[in-house]
Length: 162
Image (cartoon, rainbow, N blue to C red; front, top):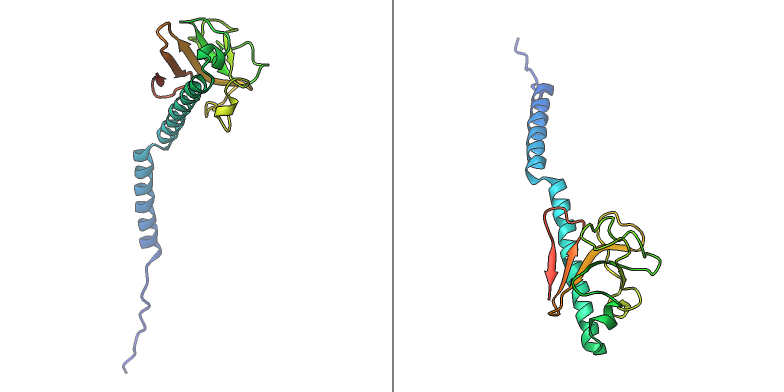
């Protein structure tokens, strides 16, 4: 008597578990290799760099449009001293809390009234920011050189100047 045995083709549970384990290990290695936390901090630093260029461009457009010099665009400031750029007149202290290079606690330059025509929104640091503070600092030198720096840069110093 001949009996025909039906063989069911498919994978066993052990084979499926082995494949899932291998895929999990490969995924873990891939995630470690691309360093998502590093990529996020790099992206925030790129945003900071773009913000600094936008602010500096706004300052120089204001100088050209108004023909008033930097004082007309930044307000009263002392040459060669470092200030934090703030976005409201209520942020008059605490400017050296994050921006430690700022000359003093009250060295805040309010750009909300002088530069709003040059921005849709005033640029803020993409990290955690105190209300009204941009966490960007500015130094104007006697030769007219304007240097902006991001106070909360994560991967080294971010500066731009003109």
